[in-house]
Image (cartoon, rainbow, N blue to C red; front, side, top):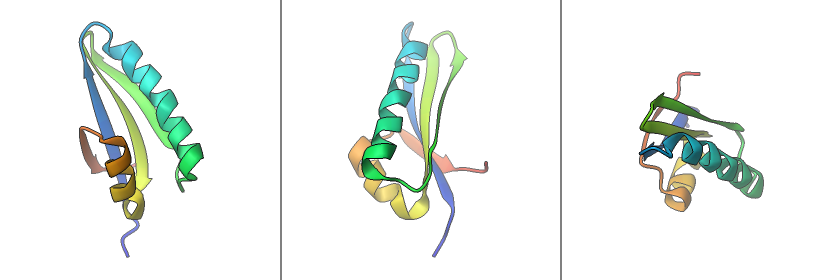
Length: 80
């Protein structure tokens, strides 16, 4: 069984993108607590004035459950 970590990413665009990504991270943290996920890695970052992301890192075995529940825009292998 793979123990890779997957970074699930939500993209936000527009003048309110940074605030939206920051707020979205709060809900990701709440989801971690509610679902008792193994990892507690979240974050948000502004890539420019009009584009920000929020992210949640999960173990690969939890990825499908979390993806289906939260509908991230994309994902990538986490190298952290």
